[in-house]
Amino acid sequence: MRDTPPSLESAPRTADVNEGEVMRAEGTALVTGASRGIGQGVALELARRGFDVVATMRNPDDGADLATTLGDAAGSLRVERLDVTDAQAFDMPSPLRVVVNNAGVEKAHPPFEATPMRLWREMYETNVFGLIDVTARAIPALRAAGGGVVCNVTSSSILAPVPFYGPYRSSKAAVSAIGESLRAELAPFGIRVLEIMPGPIDTDMLEGSDRAPEAIDFDGYREMAERYYEGRKAVEGQVTSTEDAANAIADAILDDDAPLRVGCDPLAVGMIQGWRASSDEDFMKAMLPSWTG
Ligand SMILES: NC(=O)c1ccc[n+]([C@@H]2O[C@H](COP(=O)([O-])OP(=O)(O)OC[C@H]3O[C@@H](n4cnc5c(N)ncnc54)[C@H](OP(=O)(O)O)[C@@H]3O)[C@@H](O)[C@H]2O)c1
View 1: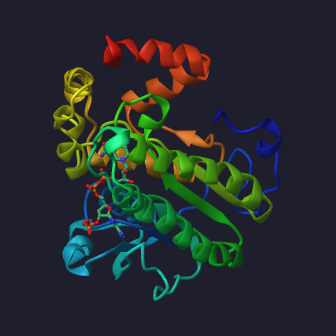
View 2: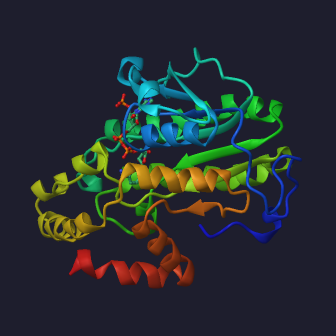
View 3: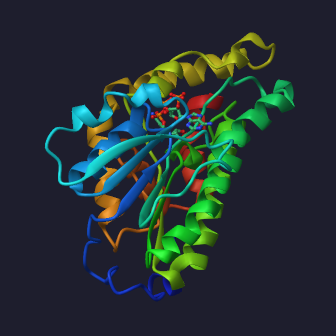
């Protein structure tokens, strides 16, 4: 995985997605997993910028107060039900300009050899297949609107060889590869594909991951799991608020010149820069000692 080949940067764009200009914040923006966390922040921020936001979530009751917290905004926000693992019943809004594939899950982290297939499947069902289904349904609506943005939220953890995170990281890496192909495939329609790779953002998911990986209970893996958890504590002072992350994500969505992969917080921005500036091997070597001792 490396940055977009230069040929894609010069692919055709539609009239309202001009080189060197920012996209106009108008039309509808759909956000998945907008009940809380990053998704909620992005839904609110895109509405503030002028989009008519469809904030989708599994349980619409979770978003009952969302529109009222918006206050005076250039755009609007309405809540609709969408479980990304069951998207058939969902009607894509129109004119659709932006899709933010944010819904995601993180589960247990046992050693690879002890990870049940059920856990892999659950992770992929939401993080990969759900995203695929929503995106495939959104593309015709984006094309009909004359172009727009598909914004996939992956994770900066893809860049580091984090032990015990195979299911989560690989689900995000799959989305990363899908995004590369789509960046090429959709460019002729003026649809720009963007990948946000968050670092630590202050959400329930981050709080839930503040624990030793389950691998700590397995002989042979305890020491590495302990060391990993010690290292993870170092991010505590580097957590970014959902508001700041949402702001950075909205900026990237509106920036026609944004690269394929973007961080939405200082830690991720630094990681992406370090990864771009070195070879995969050197980057991995620099990260590994903290876990392998
Ligand atoms: N926070 C971080 O530090 C961080 C770092 C890297 C990447 N990310 C990625 O950023 C995205 C947002 O994470 P977050 O930190 O905001 O997590 P979060 O607070 O746990 O929120 C996850 C959101 O996804 C929704 N969701 C889960 N399964 C769904 C499904 N089947 N259909 C629709 N929505 C579903 C949740 O809905 P419910 O309320 O119904 O559960 C919730 O709205 C995820 O893709 C995550 O992997 C986060």
